[in-house]
Image 1 (cartoon, rainbow, N blue to C red):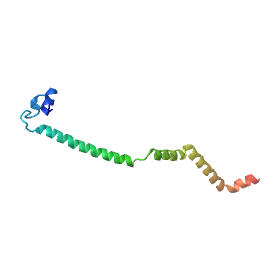
Image 2: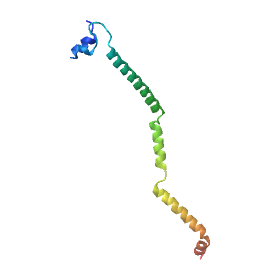
Image 3: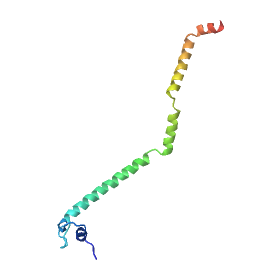
Image 4: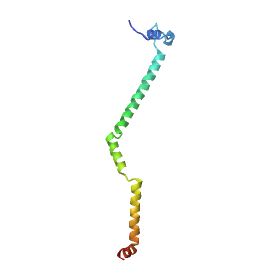
Length: 107
């Protein structure tokens, strides 16, 4: 038995008029347009998928993300920055008042 589009449409409960000239072997212009539109959409989907694959290949790997996380974790925190600033300020104050500090230490 040969399965035709008319046979499938009748089994699906669609009216035979949905496909033009089912019994005369004519063309299915409306269906051809829809299939053409689907093929065009699939071409765009394949192209978009290829673009996404290319972007993913250029994305950093998990190892690179791990290295970045390690670098970020080694950056100074606010506490470390405040401690370095206060030490630097103390050194500057001591150097600016060295004569007074020296006389105080020596007596």
